[in-house]
Image 1: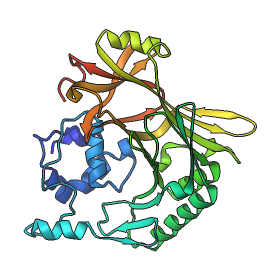
Image 2: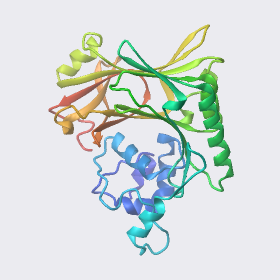
Image 3: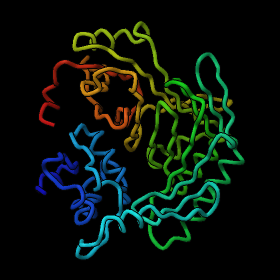
Image 4: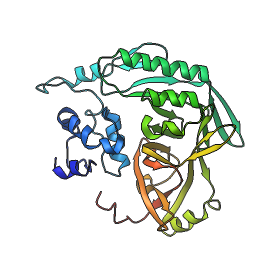
Amino acid sequence: MEDRFLNNAVPRLSAQSFNYVNVINDCIPVLNKAVKNVINTTSLSVNDMVDLIQALGINYTSHSGTGHSGTGGGSGGGSSSSSSSSSSKSEKTSDEVNVPEDSEKPVTGTLDEKGMIVKIDNGITKVSLKEENVISLIEELAKTVKKLKEERKVQLVLEISGAKDLNLSVSLPSKAISKLLENNIDLIIKSDDIEYNIPADAINSEDILKDAVLEIKSREINKDEAKAINEIAEKEGNVAMILDFSLQINSKKEVKSLTKFNNYIVLKINVKGLEDQNKLGIYYLNEGTKELEFVGGKIRDNKLIMRTNHFSKYAIIEFNKQFTDIAGN
């Protein structure tokens, strides 16, 4: 690998410029260090690496058979079947907490519909977490990780069923958010149409109000409501959809909106129903320059991947031409 990748602290790599298996085998410590300022983690899993590469707009496709199996050290002559078998093993310390044997994979605690209250209100799926359930799971996650002999990435996963579109609101008690930050646990929100990967350090603990509720919201908005971004986007191509992402902390005394974050949040948006996915990209309207800025556009499993450190309105556009700043990727 060239020094410029490390100097830029962004692995601008393509499928033609590196062998992914060799990166995992030989270069993962170097890459972890190189991209730390981008994703701020020293525990980079294979899936995270692929997501990061694709969200950066780099043309990379996982190769069959090299995928997400853990590879043994040493000579590299071990059989792929035994490696794959080993990496698939995991230990469940409870019904919710899972500790993969492969240390590159995160320790996860999954909260399903039993720990949530889900209702539909004016076309928006509203999800509220039961405080007792989520606090108990976070504490169990923290206790489990402390028993491990190595540093591991840890995730609280919210599995949401019943949300039928992108109009989704998820509310977490401030006590749960504080415990996530305190224990360095990332927050993963999964529904059929949208997925959030929010690093623990994306939010400042000082922003969490006491006895408040943190609300993460996504909604698809009509073109009239987002007139400015729509008018500019239509000059470049077909506007497939316009999305509004927001994060608020609501207390009895005040409502605080957070629009900028300390670390990048990765989102995956379902674009299964959209045609010509290879031409899709997601763009943000820079209010200062009145120009569209590319923030993501790689498709994997009918999901468009983007990474951002601020929430706002974004347009998914089917472009018939390339921007000069991404033409080389």
